[in-house]
Image (cartoon, rainbow, N blue to C red):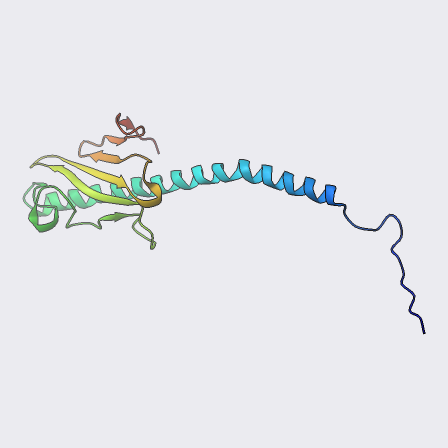
Length: 151
């Protein structure tokens, strides 16, 4: 008993190798365009999280000011005036497992303070953020010049 093998009709044989390679090339080109754009968006989102954390940190500094006889002094760990904060988390974003910024008090006096968010890990190279007690918000975009950050 012989089995008959049926062949597909001439127009329904599938894709050629050339057609498949063209599709792969198109997908590669789209990925090459989309991935850097995605990475840029992720970096900006992480920076926005750090900006929000600095704003919340400033609120904690104001609370410290009112609770400590109108002074910003002693808000850092161990009652110091600079360094890691004792009154607020030391990393941003505040939620989630991976932290991309270290938060510190870079200067504190009786009547003023400067808060700093320094990038780390995957965010390194994005530039530091700082928030001054007078409301000035700055980003060190190029590593040397401070520019005002916009929300």
